[in-house]
Image 1: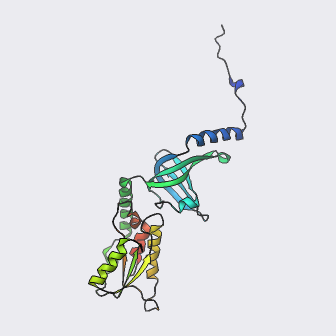
Image 2: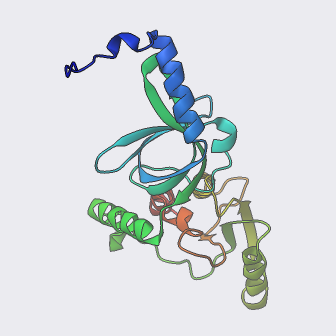
Image 3: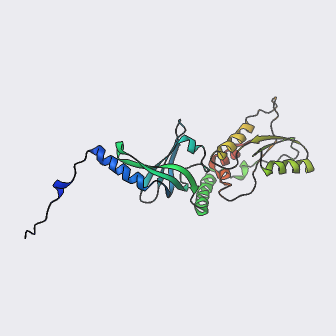
Length: 240
């Protein structure tokens, strides 16, 4: 009996690069049609097309992610660098570059602990910049004539604000309606604060003496848009 090892290499089918890539694509995509992947967001970018591109990473690996425009507009949270999230979607491959990525369908916060960690990191960063310095704080006007309110136009908060003012200190109110939850909320809030500040003093349109940025209660995740850096900076730079 011949005990020499038998080489079966010659019996392997010969594949072109395209054929092999297509087989890999079929295997990967058929086995990962719906996945939940936890990681830290890096380099989120919104293209002019509206599509969102980002990298999801942990200590040992990275995974590119794509979120098409229609889905990106409906995300419940705004992707930002350093935010730990759970991406829900499907894995696809790109044979032309031997790459694979996740097509993002939903984004969730990875948990309150991750948010608190990010919040503390952000607080330290802004504290170092002097954003919270006492000399930056403005005194409240004793007798405001016009109050600008940045909030949802349909929530209970605006009704409560108007009711309290009517009972205790009747005056004019200018409301700028914004989303107070979801991916677009932080941008809308910051733009509203900046918009009020662009109203010239002694112009045709009365400039508010005081701004209120508000929403009702909720979880840390619900209120997260108020912790976004662009909102904090808009408030810190406000001259109202």
